[in-house]
Length: 188
Image (cartoon, rainbow, N blue to C red; front, side, top):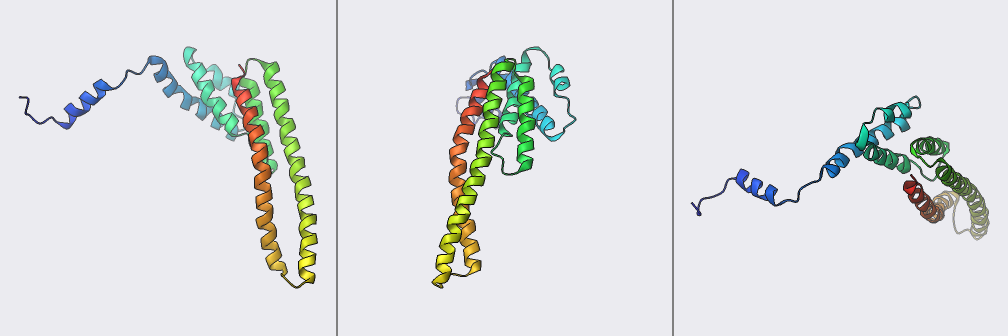
């Protein structure tokens, strides 16, 4: 029977036998991290969502995995504030982080640093934009005097140049934000 052709099922069973065994711990993680993500999404999208109540329903050893998924969603929702709506999302995510962490003193300090970073970012954007506008206007006046460009071309150039300046500014602040998020993630 050595020469017989194996069925697809037999081949699949052989491959399955050769795969490493998945630990019960990893299975619990795989099942519960998405649950935490779902709770995080519900919390972020619904102001009346009771996070404490949702967390109280979690049983035993699975809690750490639910919290892992929840924290992932909360940290992902903290971004550099492009507008007031982003600022509100940041506040909501910070509120959730504070609710799930045990070491309230450390997390409060880290969230204070986060708030400071985001405020500094807003100021930097405003100041940079104002300085950029002034410099651009000076260059535009000089170009118009020489008859080099018109208003439509100026608006296009302004948008393009400002997008580059804003991207560079965001990159610098994103690094600081990523560091702070990682520190928050490590707090118990």
